[in-house]
Image 1 (spheres, one colour):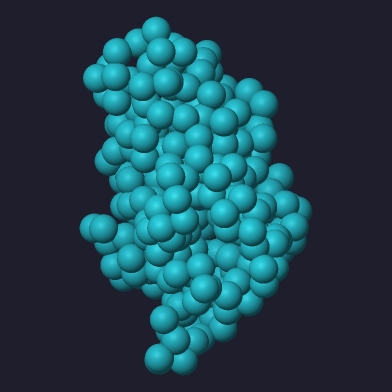
Image 2 (cartoon, rainbow, N blue to C red):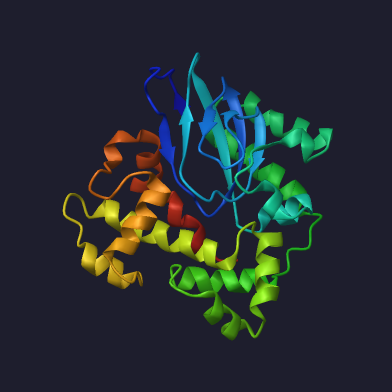
Length: 264
């Protein structure tokens, strides 16, 4: 994602919780981020951030900024770092605090490539190098994720526990360790991402009663509450055209729901 410096009164590009972790590599300049619970300021040159719990803004102030991002499946940070994912929730962490120098050197090779395709190749090589030494067998959380994605987030923690024959307390603990959120939080983000994509595709006249009913909202007011929490605006005020980065991520193959379609 490449952006030129923005005006001082420009609040920045809006991005919303994606349901993924993100490994970001600045190719030039630095993006400034606002909106995370415990972090505001310039993003590290190379960083890892876990689940995002609300909308946030990216801004470019003094010089052009270009960033290459790798989206990570919900349990990937826990597998890659062998640390509780809750440590990375809403918290961009410099990669030198996570991986050794050899892996950092490998990652920096991505910056040396001039084309997007070559960068993707190097990124895949990096991920495969790490995965080669990890146990990739499914956990209880992976099975819970499949249920959440199958239902597009329209499933309660109690229903998950019943399907998986596990106590709610145990599932809550596993999710915080492996995902960085509770099952309820993750299902809520998944549900909103699903309805948001449909909302933006509907153009100027979305059928809100149908959409909210289809995605198991109690009523439209509950949807409005989620919409404002995740976008910062009400549905009537929101215009996707204002946010070029989000528009790019939503329109063609929606980034917000791609993770739901990956078959493990």
